[in-house]
Length: 320
Ligand SMILES: [Zn+2]
Image (tube, rainbow, N blue to C red; front, side, top):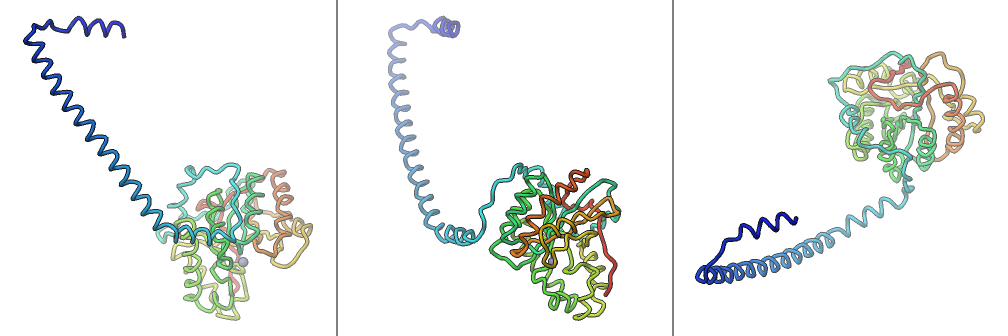
């Protein structure tokens, strides 16, 4: 610093009286120009601020409708608690990879050789979803939610489950056997309806589906003979893959928490366990059983993973 100041003084030229006068006049000129520029600048900034405030006012005037909508849509939705570890940036690859794509046929029909539980949670979202998500977070588990359209108030939980690293699959919108299995067209219309819901929550239609009752269901025969034989091929031709299960916690009918723990921990021959359970208002016993089921498998060295395109595709045989 000191050396720079010394250099400046050293370089200043000596001036005679005339040069000093010219310099003085030039100085006044420059000062006048600079002052004018500063005044213009201040005026310009003042104007700009006032324009910005006007713009903000206009935006706020246009917002009340949207704000009211947001408030209304959140009224019945449980407040999502922050997960222990949300890392949305590292999960961004799922958006393109999981989207339904008829060109992709890279399904894995074999188990992965590791002790893996694919916990699949059907029929949600519901008022129980928040509890399920918190339990999964507590144990560091990932799962797959095959969702339906029953509970509009809880649709935001689909986005929340996805944000926490779980996979979203589709289980049809109505889950009404008489409707979804009345014809292949009816099935796909229903699948498209839940596809729109899921797309609204996570930004795309996923490729993962579960048939109501599984691909082996016989009830569909009451509505359309042979429909399952047709659908298992049709869904894959359209880029979807369907997942059945090799173990169920048995909560399709009413059971105590202890019974559900018992069913959910029965020995399975495969290394991979595709475990079926349900998420609905009446399934508190399932929620209560989940910690013990998870602890059982974790103590045996299993990890809980969400389904992705590399996961074992578990298929029942078709019975209709
Ligand atoms: Zn179901």
